[in-house]
Image (cartoon, each protein chain N blue to C red):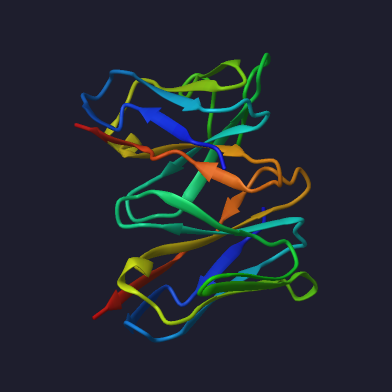
Length: 113
Length: 109
């Protein structure tokens, strides 16, 4: 299984600001994903991070709000832009293993005040 | 999009009891996975099981794809089994997952 780290683990931010979350994997992977988990809720896929091309966003998520970078096969960033209290969530990255199983990072707990 | 419903939403067990968690989905899938989210928020992959039956220790899972459901069995539950269990499914481009509503499990002494 892949070992995934995320930075920061948690942050408290003021509304109107932006936060960039980093996701690092210990091996090269083709598929990387970003999810959001709002308080007490299930996980929702934000986008698929594609290496060398633009991310593919799910319905309800846009690049201006959640820009994503994927400069290589082991690293990705998600930025939460112009934050509001509604953006308070856990943000998780995941990767796909060799047998289609997904592995998740520890998450970034974001609170927007 | 596909709907994924899990039952029961909440479950309280005494240590040593057995339980069955259910996942119903509204369309054909080619990817189904079970996850455990521990009380600290970490998601652990339990099974990749688009069809058939798998077992890993005290846990086992069965997916009946033709009838659009999957079951997760937990035997001899322990307090460390507490947390939220999610099933997640994929259709078409199998890598993208839609998560279910979750079952929150609490195991007491």
